Image 1 (cartoon, rainbow, N blue to C red):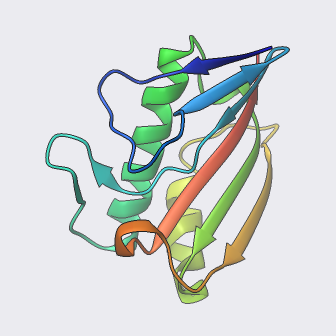
Image 2: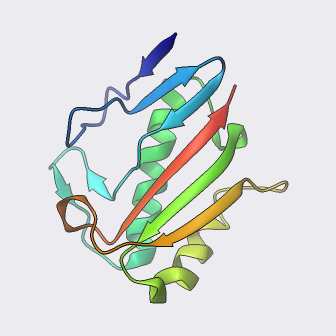
Image 3: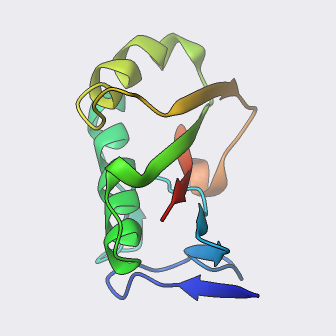
Length: 124
C-alpha cells in the first residue's frame, strides 16, 4: 500500500505526489529550484538553486515527519556537469557522515528550464 506525502507549502508542476511511502521507504519526487510562492524558478547561481532544491526537499521530508538524517540515496540531475563542484559545496552542508549513497547524472533538459533537479529516497 502506498501513501502520499504532501508539503502543504509547495506545488507540483505535474500530476504526481511530492513523495510516496511504501513499507517505511519514502520516495521523493525530484525537486527543482521552484519558488512555490511565485511558481517561478529561483534566480541566482547554481549554488543558490541547489540550496533551493534542498529547501524544497526539506519541506517534503518535514511533511512526512522526517529529516535529512533519514535520507539513504540522492540523485542529482544537472544540465551542465561543469556545475558539479559548486553543487557539491552546497550538498556537503546538507548531510553528515555516514553520507547517503549518491548519483549525479547529466541530462539534456529539466522541467521549466531548470538546470538542476534533486530527488531522494528516505527510510523511516
